[in-house]
Image (cartoon, rainbow, N blue to C red; front, side, top):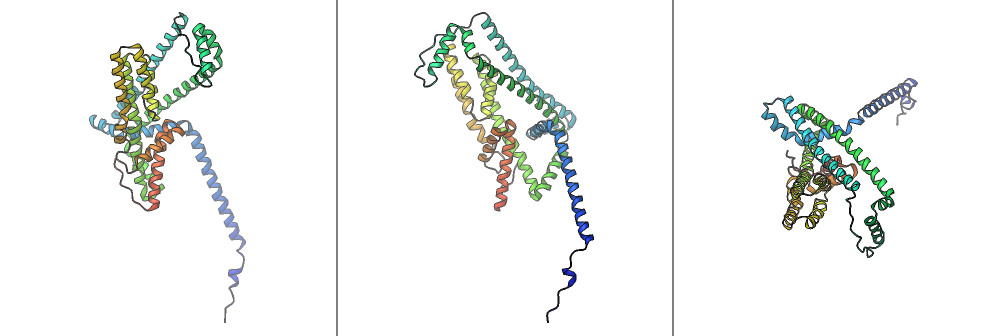
Length: 368
């Protein structure tokens, strides 16, 4: 004979139980709200320093092997090694900026003196009517400039004003970026002095976030940052330096400025050819044939060395395919600028590793 259901199981929960549940839910909501408010306040306070801190972390990871070599040379005195690193990094940052500024000032003074002295001469305009849409307009403006340059400048005054505003905005952003780099160098110096503690903290956070995979992901992020610093920024710096030395040797004006443009173009993977090939053509018209031919050979060499250096440096020591790192770096650069080179590569590489882990494939162990 079936038993009757227990009446206590069917009776509603006592009022005290409901009251305790509501009070506990309200207390949890208040705690979460206070925690979120605290996190938001911390973020607001730290927001001006987030970019320098990110750069400081990137610099620390990129130069840590060199810092260890410096540390051995100074007898494992961390404070001294960090101080030397800060001085060397500031010198590497400030010296090219000073040389570039001097080049720009000299170029501006030369242009101003030439304009005031009436030494600007523009040859007669060639026939450009065969160029669709804009050929006739360019020819008319060129013709006006060859007769009266002030009148030609007056015709394009709105465009010149917009260009001036863009230059001022670029200079402001560049100055802010330099300030961020200076702060980041000091942050990196402190992190390098406390590198063991910082490494333990990073691995602890990674372990809390990803469990037993955390250490591997942390090592992968470190390897990707070093790979990008070598394979993209390192190669771009080598190409820009060689391009600048070649232009200085050939006697090209504003060589420092063109070397900076070459650095930017090489960073975004356009290479140095857009700068050096026009310079080679200019030398064929203004310099001796020997100088122009030697500079052209130098241009071909400098423009082609990235095809050799990049495969050697970009994906060395990591299990992620070079294409993944390259796509992440370029996509990050398009979205976030220079710092996106590293963030994009790290994010995409970690996403690739997570995909392999989800599919159940064990990636090759990361080497440092």
